[in-house]
Image (cartoon, rainbow, N blue to C red):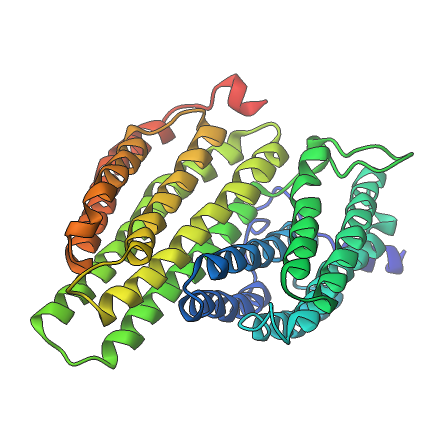
Length: 401
């Protein structure tokens, strides 16, 4: 009886006031990903080419995926128990190795990245299967299916780390494809079938808060880039203007997500009869676009601070406009999935950024960045009133299905 009680303690409690609370060990675990996001933006800056952008996008997808899968697991497991804490600390060690290898992942540290990533994914899921041996049968089968898919993708991650150049990119793209399509297929496996979304009985408030904290991590990178770069520059009216524009854009991104997207997402997932569907589609996939948009914007901020005036090249214009555009697109898709609506503020913000593109070459980096930041500020002000009205509505039957 005592053994069963201790095993039951490994599971997160449901339905009480503390069930959605994020623990200190989870926040400690997230520090690894603060480092990872910093590595990603710096890697893109150091290899500011189309090839470098493709590589950075691939690694960003991998980093997000390994984090969101862990957030799902800790949604079921109790992080205040010793075995789960040991798991998270072990994953931190692998994550530190994985993050440290990001800058040269497509050169001499590729094998280290591939091994660390595969061990992270497989080890965490294998531990969960072991914990669930006394848990619900369908949930245990769900993680057995996930483990099978991650073992398959792990082979591609490790083999990709062994080969070089285009072969590495191809194998790692195959690994990501396997991992990204598997949830939409219900992690189907021969003989045991697929997992229905109602098995993913997530604690909605916990997962929503965890994703919000990752957005804070990404926005923190923008703040670090802005502050660190500005501190090295000679202060002048131009650099002060670039500093203010960078800060305004970051604040507007925060406002758009936490005063609109996050608030509505939390409201709808709390009222949904199938929170697993919303968590899979809205939080697992669309937040990748939010993180990518913030990272690209951080790169744009550093380029702006270093060269605020003068001629603007196509690559700089692309990141100045592309970062906010990717971010707004992610927010818009999230709202479409969760609330089955497309806020006009998001749509018009995207249109405005597109309309700025033809004039980008005629503007200085400072003017173009100021225009992009102004778009984000307008979207944040416009959208706040919309979110207040929407949260007062009871979710429709379609959104609860």
